[in-house]
Image (cartoon, rainbow, N blue to C red; front, side):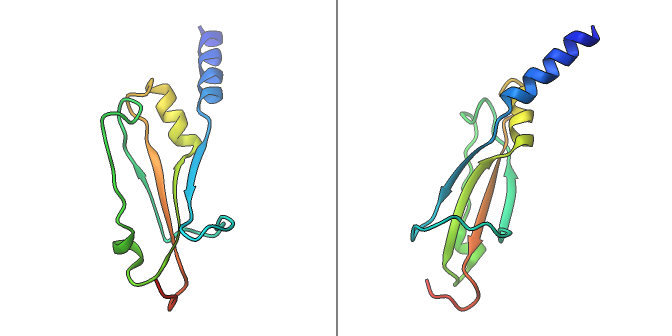
Length: 103
């Protein structure tokens, strides 16, 4: 029985890969610093049953949006795998320009 659980855990780890979609309005290289906003959003049935929006104007205010990212972290993928996609969270991140940068 322990061997079966070990194989199941190993398969769950292998199937819980990471994925990232990054949007930079002005192009260029990705920002690597700490985001101004980061929150895990719940999705259900592989993302088909729930939709989320992130209001970047509310987050950045008068500052320019440098980068927006939707990411499936290792933990997000692991949770989606062990629940067979019933619960499959994604993490949203937003980076704003430094103070005083114009829109």
